[in-house]
Length: 280
Image 1 (spheres, rainbow, N blue to C red):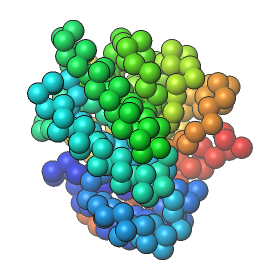
Image 2 (image 1 turned 60 degrees about the vertical axis):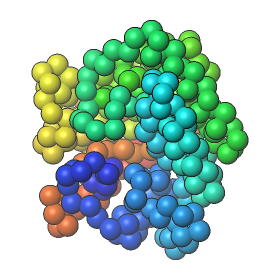
Image 3 (image 1 turned 90 degrees about the horizontal axis):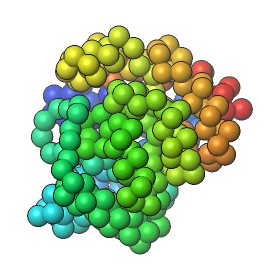
Image 4 (image 1 turned 30 degrees about the vertical axis):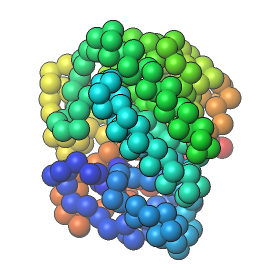
């Protein structure tokens, strides 16, 4: 997402994988996440040499699935199983799961599931844990703005009703009205993956409280380089280190590119210049 890569129709100009991977290698730690379906080849024997050529390891990948409807549960679990098999073959450690309300449509705030739908969702998450175990992956469920698991009450229900690990995404927690430090304490010992980003606080308020379109807000600069917004990533990293978190810190700074001339690398570099001293 830092390079504007997305499978959402009309999201923006999509850079070719060679450029993204070469720039990621130039500024990063030799590690990358999988990106959306279609970014890397869907055959592991084709994706492996591509990653190897750029001296990159794959550490995690995200999958979206509708898990609160019983009648499509089997198809959704089969979709997750295929993605998990692909991630495992490429050496990934973690599957990041986002429980989405539907396949089409933009991000929505305030989605409320019935008790029956919550029961289906939690049961399905347990099944995803078994899928991940079979492929030797850790599961990290991502509370995310626009998903069926968003704010503090949803996260508490997830923690009580399942044994799944959690992906802490700083910006999306703030967008959903959660305090990341509170969530870190609530999910103590169950944070399996961390995605760091920063937000323009005024735009975040427009999205959260006034229904401003999420994609339009991203185009206007909703996500900022670390340290240049109001998310206080330094405090979150300090709290994570104090909690003995030992997983990966992923930079997920969503952006939309107008043309191939846009150069997201500068924003990525500024974020890393801010972050790396916090981790040393």
